[in-house]
Image 1 (tube, one colour):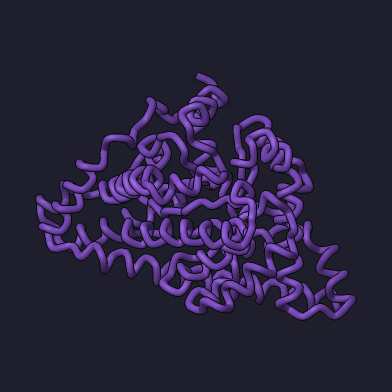
Image 2 (spheres, helix red, strand yellow):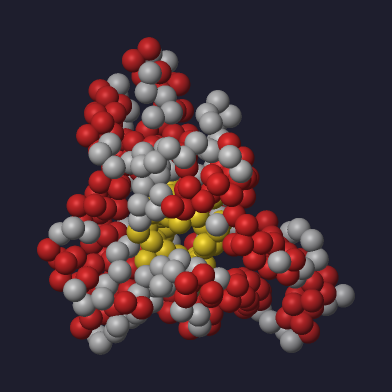
Length: 371
C-alpha cells in the first residue's frame, strides 16, 4: 500500500486530516500546498508553541521583522502582526479546499493570547480582534475550554465568529463546550446571522491523558493497575464521541440544523505519541470514524502514511467498553477528575510559557534589526 492509499483510506473513512504546524517557511516554499496535494491535508492548527518554534528557525521572518522595527511597532503588535500574517496567508492557501468541501474543511486556526485563558471578557475582545484582523471566512479562532473560556465561546459564536475550542480533556467539560456552541448558535440566530457560515471544532486532547494516567498507574505499581496502562486516552476520546453523537441528535440541535447550522466536529489533538513503547500511529488508527478531525504533527502524518493500519471505524459502538475502562481506573484509586484538572492547568501553563518565549524571540529580533 502506498502512502497516498493509507491517507486516502483515512480520509474516506470520514477523518479530516489537518496538520498541527505552520511556519513562514512552509508557506514560502510551497510545502503546505504540497501536503494538500499529495497527503490529503485539508486544514491547519497552530498554537503558541508552534509559532515560538517557527520564529526561532531560519530567516523567513527577517524582512517583516526589519519593517516592524523600522516603524517602531510594539512587541505585542509585532507578534500579533507576524502570526496573523502567517494565518491569513495559510487561509488563502486553503481557500480552494474550503470551497471544494462546502466550507467544512480548509480551516486554519489561531489561538487567543494564552495569558487570557482565565479572563472571559478579554478573551472575547481578543477573539473579535483576531477575526477582524485576519478577515478570512475559513479562519477558526482558538479559545481554551477553561471555566472562563466556555462563556466566551457562546458569546463569540453568537457574533458569527467561527471557533476552535482547545484544551478539552474531560467529557464533562466537552459537554459544557457543546452546550456553549448550541447557545452561541441560538444567539447568532437571534442576532440575524446566517448559521451556515459559522463553523466550530472541539479539540479533545488525546496523548496527554495517557501520559498523566500512566504516570499514576506506574506509581501504584499493581498488576491490576498495570493492566490498564495505555488505555485511558483512546477510551476518553471514544466517550467524547459518544457524547457528540448524543448531543447532535437531540431536539435542540434539530431546531438549529433546520435553519442551516453545521455540527461542531470533534477534533483529536495531541496525537503525537509521547511514550516510545506505543505504536506511533495509535492515536490515529484507533480513533477512526466519521465527522471528526485528526490534527497531526508532520512526524505522525508521515508515520500514518508509511505504516498506518486503517481498518475502518474504530470508534462507534465502543462507548460502553470505554466507560468500563474508566470504572476500572477508579477502582484502582486513580482520581480521573484530578487528572483532567492537572492536564488543563499544565496545558494553559505550557502555552503561556511558549507565548513568553515567542515574545522574547521577537524582542531579540526587533532589537537586532534596529542595530
